[in-house]
Amino acid sequence: MPVVNFEFKAKVADVEMMEGRLKELNPRFVGEDHQTDTYFNVFTGRLKLREGNIENSLIFYERENAVGAKQSNILLYAHQPDKALKEILAKLHGILTIVNKNRRIYFIENVKFHFDRVPGLGTFIEVEAIDNDGTIGLEKLKEQCDEYAAFFAIKPSDYSAQSYSDMLLTSKINI
Image 1: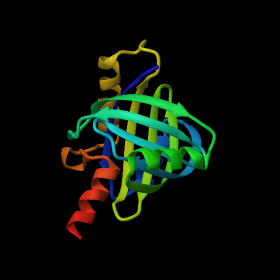
Image 2: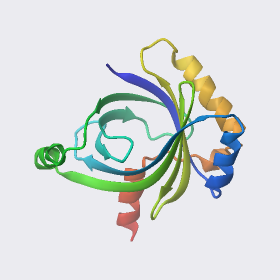
Image 3: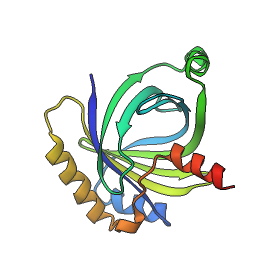
């Protein structure tokens, strides 16, 4: 079943301070995940295989590269780690890029918070308001993102329009 998110990503100088602010709201801490996201060549959207110590999923998503909070349409297949899946996808599609990151994950109700450290790119906060079954609606998801952007005092210049994969690809071109 497709999942709809409304989400934003922002580059932050002091990720620990942002995480400390969130802790004031008593979120549920899921854990710290070292994630390797392998992006594959596809004609539309993005296809990535996430391998982590907490989250392991094959994820297809479509999202605009736009600054600020934006809608993301996701198809997600959670799986047990298996090298064969990655090998099959690499043979079929070819690998576009690989993103390694350390991510601390929290939840407040349907809202997921990521505090990310991405080598070569810096530190980021991501907020995802998630509607797993269509009962919340886009307007509420957008309101939740706006509320947390204000809570964290995210400025328009802090937002990242691109995915980590796009940032890495761009940085490789400019090296």
